Image 1 (cartoon, rainbow, N blue to C red):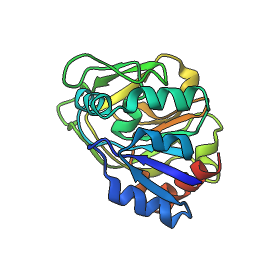
Image 2: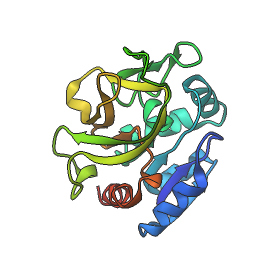
Image 3: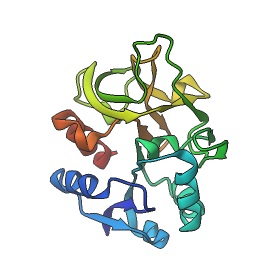
Length: 205
């Protein structure tokens, strides 16, 4: 059985995600074939780029219905990373209003800096505050730094879905959880030992 399927829809940092998962002990398949989800025990949805482009690529390659079916019906754990987390939302506004996967209720909006000294995109290391107990952050101290690169952020419809926040532009949801669906706005594969700890935690959920 394939332990982890990393979804290849043409917009992910696939190499570093695969290597990080393998270092955490996973058997990994980077796949462009949605039928591979049928044999997966975990799914990673990475992503770099714009929301509208991401959804267009998922649709063109047949991933949308396959993801919804396997996640909702089979309850296969899924982790969205960066753009992958944003695509879990109901809709996003990057590249025009676009319907998302609808796996975690919410929308994705652009940062609006309140001060001229705040630079967009949000790039670099920033702290992550754990807002409620959850399996992703097991064994990870509160307020650890993780690595971010993004100009848009997830606005959750239900505060109960938010499991971590980050203090930038008034604060935003940097990790969400809805059933077996997880999302992190930062890049765990670029976040040193705490990022690898989070990936190992995901492999255990």
